[in-house]
Amino acid sequence: MQKTDLHTHTSFSDGHLNPEELLKKAAGQGIEIISITDHDSINAFEVAKSLENKFGIEVIPGLEISSDIRDTEVHILGYFIDPQNKELEHYLHFFREERYKRAIRIVEKLNILGLKITMEDVMERANNSAIGRPHIAQALLLNDQVKSYFEAFYKYLGNHAPAYERKVHLSPQSAFKIISDAGGLSFIAHPGNMPEILVKELIDAGVDGIEVVHPSHTPERIKFYRGIVNEYFLLESGGSDYHGGKREDDDNLGKYFTSTKAVEAMRLRLMRNTS
Image (cartoon, rainbow, N blue to C red; front, top):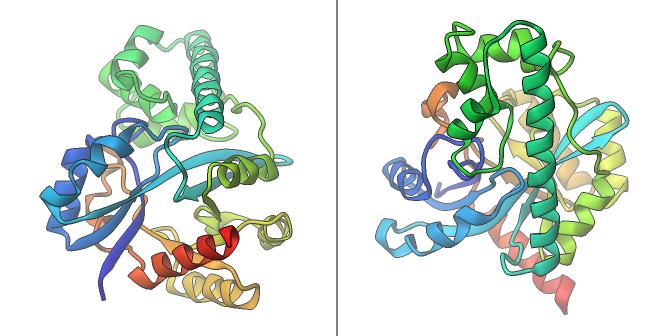
């Protein structure tokens, strides 16, 4: 089977590798189609697109947006979006600004808890990318405030942990519209830990597809979500959710993937939408 990885991250958000490093690694794993789905950023696409011929990999424009259903955070993947769409650019700029403000609040909470960390430490780790909790975790680790990246999340940054701060609220319907208005398709990301009733709500709200293959999904879950895709005439995606670095997920790239048929089905859906 030809390998297609539709969920990866670069240093333009919370990934460890830059686009060229990611494509080189992906090529070494036999991946033929890839989508870089950075959080609230499409800035890696242009760089990656220019390297398609060098590595023999097709690059599909993508991104990952966070949304909420009541108290549950839901991530939405967008594919085949227009990187030049001005409205999308406006929204993503807003989200990145909100990420910065959120990071300030988290750092303030950490300081109150007695941890020695500054926004300068976080900005150094982010290096002009969309700031996220992983950058704060890295700063804590480098400042010897925690013993591991995972400890930073478990003790301080994870959902319901003492320094946790919610992102700006965005409904799934709004995320779907942002993606659709930019010419793209929306997918529920890694629904494995999501109550089934929420998956049904997202389907009713108009999502285009579900990420069936993901490192957090057991073979039973993959079979289950593939059944839902078929039952509701949805599209299927899948990928490694590769970040690299302290995530210790190097083995996932090339191990978790979908087929080129999934991409062909997306293209067909887009053609029907515009006809």
